[in-house]
Length: 247
Ligand code: BTN
Image (cartoon, rainbow, N blue to C red; front, side, top):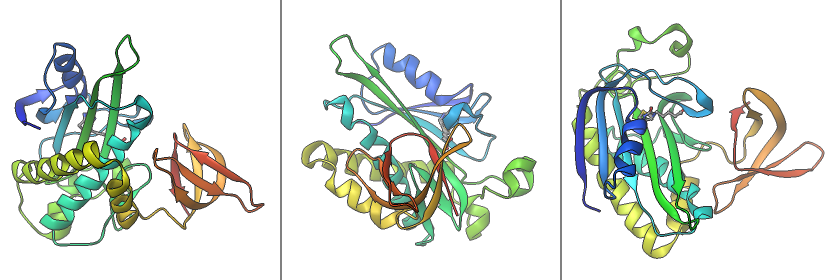
């Protein structure tokens, strides 16, 4: 994939700009980066705190695959970021919480928001993978509600990496995994996801819009990225949406 960087000082959201570029025909590999976002978006329609110091970017993809496999791109992105950050910061303490939150010792350091557009034939027109990584934020400046649940990488590891450096590494990992995935399918991605995840085997509450809808132990993840949860009574349910809190 040929990477074409489009850099901005400030955007509402790199996902919004990436969608606009994709609609205008931007090729696969177009990457929109902003130094800060004024309307950064998170999952579940939440706002995403995006001041200067973090790495905020979105990648335009045009995979020729069946739409039902598109969710694998999000798993792939989580794996690529985890690989890159583990290498850069020389740590194995960065883990993936289903579906694609990256945690450092149970505090969030990265979030991923993907969106997809089908064309009139039902094939994928484009997919956007938006990635936010807390590279060089000052934890002292975190808003109150994030202080307990988020961390910043440089501050945690006492390093001084730039967002540009981290971006280059992440894109390198992403591109490699993406090519492998297109050629060979999802096995490698799922296996790496399993290696990095901190979710399998855990007791969790499954939530949809902050409402608990199921609880139990996560016993597996399938190739679409859905988790299978077993309740106390032995009932099995799989979830491909929502989020979990680990108990
Ligand atoms: C989450 O809720 O965990 C997902 C957060 C995704 C944030 C990134 S920052 C770059 C891209 N642009 C956005 O507006 N959101 C994503």
